[in-house]
Length: 135
Image 1: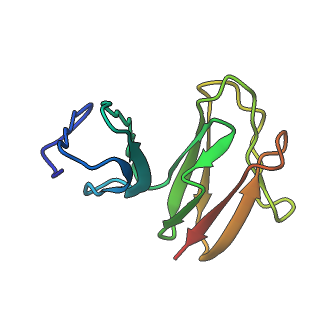
Image 2: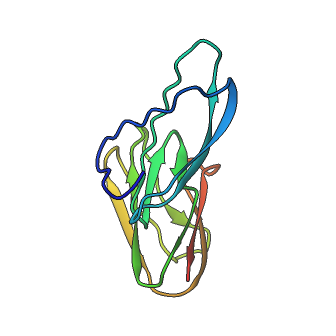
């Protein structure tokens, strides 16, 4: 893909052998995507991938996506809740940052002005974890 692809773009790859395949997408101005997809013999396989701008985290399927991001100092990171359930974004370091309860579609934003590593979790579902690394 190159910078001429915007919005929903269908990409077709034919004649892949059955099995697992590594998928990497890179588009300037967006976070890279890396993952795997499985192709089954005699079947068509579809995979929907959403590229996000730097500093954007999606809360979906009870996970932070991407779980770890690296941004330069001064970046405002946004978390958007795409789950039907409520979530929060809470720093693992007390009183560093904490969102209110986010309903579906709501966004929390926090500006990271100091270099460092900032682990966080969901206060409602504490098995959900993420990290912001600021350079």
